[in-house]
Length: 269
Length: 221
Image 1 (cartoon, chains in turn orange, green):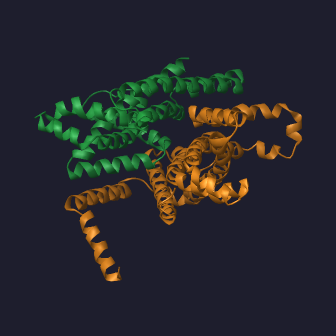
Image 2: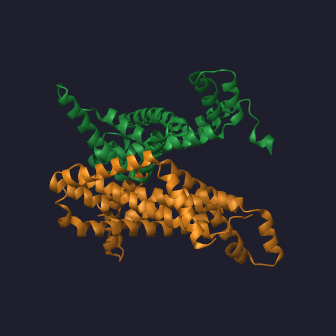
Image 3: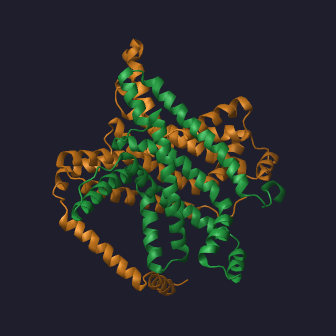
């Protein structure tokens, strides 16, 4: 397709999308935004905005770390459930059921308040090198979110591993590949492609559970907005801005994942 | 134990409200005019993109504030919204967005001929909804709705953050008094797990019931 034709195509699609009622709706939305900008109080922004950026950074950092670690944990969980022997798959199944059957907030508080209150009773833990970390809140947050992601994603990966056609694995074996090579070259990539659309949803869900870490005193963007609300006695403005920030991050995440998805071959299996 | 009861009450109420909103929303999205459709698209997108916790805070404060302002403007006295009603309303609003999408998908999965046949029989839209569309979409919607119910039971825990006395907050308070944090949290976790597992059993039964008369998946293969 030439550039000109592409431009016409884009213009056609835009005119299809920009019907009269949509223009009216967009104008109403813009008016609402302007009302919010002019009639609400935003003078606290300059004071807190550095803190807010730090909060966003911390939220994203937690999101990235827990997703990466959680996925690394989910692969063996899914593999164990899909093709492991019973003493391997049963614990994995129990783990997934427990994680998916209880609220994340409860898991978080169980780890932080429960285990956190248990550790100081043992002197050898207090003297070990781990103690400075165990006294802070963020390791508990990372562990809880990682487990949660692994629990949900483990179930997805089980389905993805089971969904790879047997013929592919048999062909790989016929090529004389070792088991590890089959896993690395055939099984994992194909399962990953299958799980990718779900992975997008899971990552967005994970983003939406990051504000929970604020309840155990990790300063993420949610905690920053709570602090603003406490300091300035404003109810809506910080929350609205917070909602906007999360929506932006979600939009970026979905966009990035759709780009990745577009790159993988459509026809698999 | 009262906490568990409260949690269940909220979860049931929120799911019912969510189903109502979801059914209405799905029909609006499928058959409504362009403006309704766009507004509903904005609703479902926004609610599903913002964390539940933020929404709960926003709606909890905004909702109670709005109602009180409305009441004072109309000359009534301010009322204290009970945590239960607010919780049900807020979670129902959130659930509504998700169930809108689930039910919309389920309605789209109904073979088109069934709806056309109903129309050919001269059924009114209300009758068609009651006799054809809702029963026919049920088997497609049940798995998604069951998922939503499980999410609802777990989302009730988030209401602990706004200070509503449900299972998680009650657990934390009890644990704080007795200093036996681990024990109480484990017990609460077991309760949540029991609720999930029991629901799973019942959902299986409901799904089998809603699929009656349809060829079973195993036979179809």
